[in-house]
Image 1 (tube, rainbow, N blue to C red):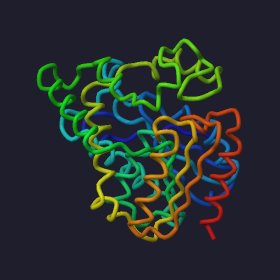
Image 2 (cartoon, rainbow, N blue to C red):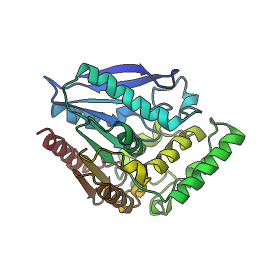
Image 3 (cartoon, rainbow, N blue to C red):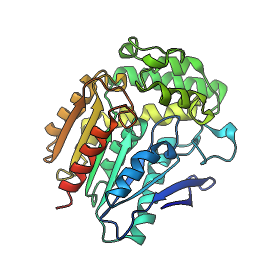
Image 4 (cartoon, rainbow, N blue to C red):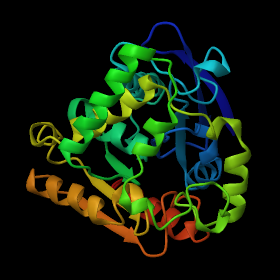
Length: 310
């Protein structure tokens, strides 16, 4: 059963849209989904229904500036002017707190994809305690100098144009050399970096909820989080006994075609995290939950979750 719910964002203005996928019978655990940049939670419907059929209560929300968590479509891609990344992370915790009040005894997992994976990694540095585990999907690692340069440009643009300003130039700067093997013009559906399924890409490009430009506020949230999670002092704040599962497509440019994913894994191992696995899927791109062979990923996630219930 699917149920729509709402809560007030920590921006204290916006009503956040959220969804619960409720299994038949008593749920065995909760898994919260954290979606990526320029999309919305109901793109995960198929995956959520799969997990619900395995007995998991699945929850997730549209971030500020995404989906139905906006006051008008003009706010797509805009979070807040003040500390947008922290606001997004607080909203993740608000949903967790709300759900745990209703299900206080159930193990609680969180899965984050893409921008959601970075937000989850940031979340774990402050609120990882008490989780049964976390699944980091489609993540990466970028050099600090490059990210800091991007932040300087974002903040300079915001100073002159405002935090609602949308810039195709800023968008293009997020594409590193790893993207060059793919079509970035949205015309060759078979060669999209996002997913190799042309039908998925056709729907994606036709959906206005997936085709808006990020504002300077959105890029501030994203880049400040990418920088935050790459710092050794922050990585060391993650609970050492928290089970982590890092998964990505080997052809995902967000993870620098696997290199950035391995870098994250190695930094976490070096930080002393004791229960951690990393898996790269050959021939898969960014959205491994939407690839033609997605059932392999679904089954791996379910098996990892079940393993950590015992």
